[in-house]
Structures are given as structure tokens and as C-alpha cells.
Length: 318
Image (cartoon, rainbow, N blue to C red):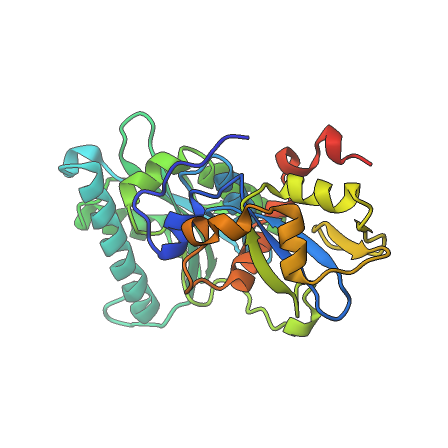
């Protein structure tokens, strides 16, 4: 299991702390009524991390698959027109935002303006040959002609052409493939260029709103604590001592355990798995302002419990 480098730069207290735990620490949850226990591996959720970057790509791909994207296009900058890769990024980011606003309001016509719909998901990628960025876009709504995009790029001094023809997307799986393909290519290098800016961004109405009852979530009602040991170690400890067994009715991607003949509270469980947590808690514990339940939910959202490196291990095949 490769270890995660420190995020560049850390964007929040969670990022800087979680980077020290990625691939080693874990979150332990227990449901106070049922006694069910779940172990969530720690992850930093940073594109510069070799372990978390594929997870993030899969998460965005799942979201894109249900968004209803209709087209795919790439905007490529001309390096000669920019003093540096960072300057090229700032120019393309700013001018693209202006272009979308203008297109939505006018539809490209000065004499007969007509409002248009243009919702998008944009993925930044660094060009390995030049080190300059270009922008991959999933779009839905009204069709915007390539000729109009080319003219805008020239007038804005971004580039001279659209990187490739606008392609039609016919399925959610097709949209997901684009996301995985381009978000995984040199994502760490691109994120270092972006700094605190997002590698993937989307317009407000691109994704379908999720209207779900939180009580239906498999993690609803769990209490949480943090352990220094890995998720695999925590699971082995719980199972090898015959305290818990895998839930045969679990239909989620998580490894949920049910108590056998004993049912310990969360504090006692944590101490049994990791006795050092008492002495080291002040030194290594997460910042107090962090919400462990929210962290667990975010880790599940990016599919961290599906990692073969953590769970498909000869020790965990029962």
C-alpha cells in the first residue's frame, strides 16, 4: 500500500491531518441500538495521493453517469499565447466562465438574443508534451457550434481551435468513461498546478439533485471514533476474537459486523483494538472541529471500502 504525500497545499484542517493517516488509520463506528460495527479506512481524498486519486475518479464517474450529459469537447490552450502554465489556466478558467454566461444570455446573437441552456462538468488535465493545461467538458442543454467556440477562443487569446470535434454522448456509461480516462491522467501534476482550485468543477444544475432520506443510509445513527491502526487490523481483531462476525444480510459495499455473544460499547471496543489510543490520543487525534460521521460518509461516497489493497487480502478471506 503506497502512502499519501502531504496535500499541496492543505486546504482545510481535515486535509493536513488525514494525510498523516491515509492508508494506516481508520474510523470505527458502532450503532448504539443494534450493536453493529463498521470499520472505514482513513483517506485524505486528495488528487495528489496515488491511493485516493482513483477513488475520486470513480466517485465523479458515478455522478456523471446519472447526470444526462449529451456532449463531450476539449478546449486546448496555445502555449505561445501564455507566459506560463499557471497563466494559461487562469486565462482559460476566467474566459470560459465569461463565455458560458454570454452564451446562456444571448445564444451567440447580438441582434436576436435568445437564452440558452448550458450545464457542464469540466475536468482539468495537464498536457504531458507541453506542461500546459487543457479543459475536458461534459455538457448538456442547447448545442453550441464549434465555429462559435473557435471564434471565442481566438478573440479571448486562449487558443486557435477546439482540441477535437464535439462528440455525442449516448449513455451514462460513456460519460463515466470520459471522467475516469481524463481525471486519472497525471492528476497529481495538474492538482499541484491548480493549488487550491478544483480539478473537477461543475455548473449548479449539471448533476441530478439527490432527494434521499438520511434514515435510509446504512451509516445512519452510528457513533464514531478514530483508531491509529489500519482498517484490516481492526477487522481482524474483531473477528479473530470471535466477538463479531460479518453481517450475512449486508447489501452495501461496507464490511458491517454483527456482535456474537458480547456487545461492547464504542470506547471499550476502541481500546480492545488499539490500546495505544489512550496514551496517544492527544498527540495524534484529529482536530476537535472535525465531524467523524461526515468523514465516514465522505469516505463511503468515494468508494474507499471497495479497495482491493485493503480488503482482498489472504488474511481477510474467511
